[in-house]
Length: 212
Ligand SMILES: *[C@@H]1O[C@H](CO)[C@@H](O)[C@H](O)[C@H]1NC(C)=O
Ligand SMILES: *[C@@H]1O[C@H](CO)[C@@H](O)[C@H](O)[C@H]1NC(C)=O
Ligand SMILES: *[C@@H]1O[C@H](CO)[C@@H](O)[C@H](O)[C@H]1NC(C)=O
Ligand SMILES: *[C@@H]1O[C@H](CO)[C@@H](O)[C@H](O)[C@H]1NC(C)=O
Image (cartoon, rainbow, N blue to C red; front, side, top):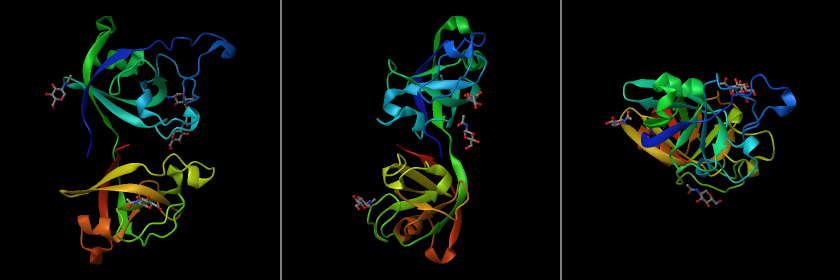
């Protein structure tokens, strides 16, 4: 399950590979990248308001496609002047889709989706500090998706994800952490799990994607 958006991609200059470390520019995510890295800057609307270094969008992989070509790039920076769906590609990534002389092009891009196992849990007071019930459409994600700080303030809390199993999908809010889950696994509330499969199945294979 991916979200495709028709947008414009430009490229940005990260070409300070030969500068001393003190002069190299860091992206909003705090990484030091170069023009030969396959990286992208997304619009401010895609970042939370907090410390961009800790933004959960940093280090995500998105796939950008133009006509029949596509490239996977890592989110490393914020583009203040971009419209919500526009993006800036590094020269290496832009060149994989079109000649740099073009300057900009229309692309479709999608957030990376995750494949894992879903089982169900009985929501209560979760790591995000919300009190939820079995009748709320909520999920717990693995610890690796949370920062190490206070989980109540984790930027992943309150995000919406869409979980798909075969041809059925359900949108759920992230409210808890699942300490025993593998990176891409999740726990769904009984009502959310039931929207995908019978509770008696216990566990199902799912694809999921962040909607926010
Ligand atoms: C971007 O830079 C970080 C280190 O600052 C590095 O770990 C990461 O691999 C780079 N991304 C790519 C796609 O090369
Ligand atoms: C990006 O995420 C991967 C996998 O979660 C991790 O191994 C890597 O260290 C991260 N890179 C940076 C630059 O944060
Ligand atoms: C974006 O996707 C639509 C629908 O699949 C397609 O018609 C269009 O040609 C794509 N645009 C680009 C620039 O690849
Ligand atoms: C989860 O609980 C919080 C309050 O504790 C509530 O605001 C939120 O709407 C609930 N989420 C869902 C999807 O019902």
